[in-house]
Amino acid sequence: MHDPVYSGMPATDLGTEGWEKPWSGSNGGTCIEAKRLPDGRIALRQSTDPAGPALIYTRSEVASFLEAAKAGKADFLIS
Image (cartoon, rainbow, N blue to C red; front, side, top):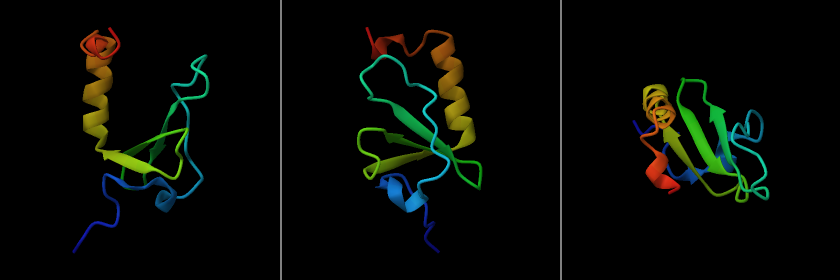
């Protein structure tokens, strides 16, 4: 059976409620929005394209990324 929630699916298929902008700031409105899904996975989408694709990650994948980012291991993304 095919999982109805998959990475790259239209974000609108996940509904309009529950999207948060934890990374918003003075960046001109371009934010990453996150939504916790009922099964614990996390969906990410670009705020300027709310109907665009959603990237779906497991909780452990997001936790690993956040831990690494806090330790400076993702600094290369913005340097």
